[in-house]
Length: 295
Image (cartoon, rainbow, N blue to C red):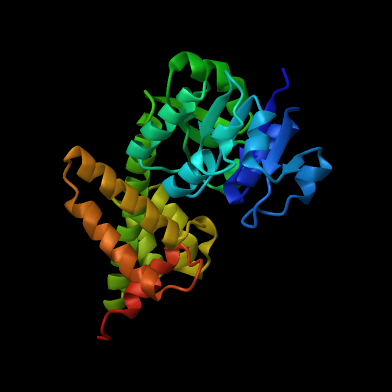
């Protein structure tokens, strides 16, 4: 059954999601924003561009948010002319953003108070998998509502995990990104040390890959370490700082240990101050090498 779907946030990830929703025959409208990727192909495929979040919500059975973080989600939902002002009774808000769980709970309550329903559904993988319809989704919310929305989610997801109640999806996303980005930061620091001690990049990569350092993080770092190409991990240092900051907030709210997470965040914050705008995580290896005295 074709649904009326509204989307806010047509960036690198959102554009792939939107393309697959249209490809599967759903009627899509998107919110105009200067941060969107080019919309020409979507419009040519029948997508409607709206200039009001409330009007977008009023014509949508499901509203999908793919935004940078909690401040943006809160503004789009609760701000003047926001999504909450136009939601239809019984509609669903699916938040695919990365957010602080405590904020997620507040936004879910606001959506429910407006007579609608809520799933937090953050994603893992990259823009390439978004375009291919092969994302991983980590869902927080009612299991029955997830099953109701599953056919739409399967338009752009390969794996769908029910993490638990509302907020659990965003909690799992922060856990995932802490482990994955923390591992990348560790590899970058080790690679910088390897340079200082005369270990060739190809030897560094080969030994780790065939020993205890192998895995997805190393594979994504390999193009940079060997050829100075960031194609394996197009994830910005700025977004990594944001996600590690969110993780530290979540851990602190729960009274969990976070000494290592705090150290990773400090490293990323220092790099962000020196990085070119839009610098990607693999570039951290060279930035850390540049801060070490020559031997």
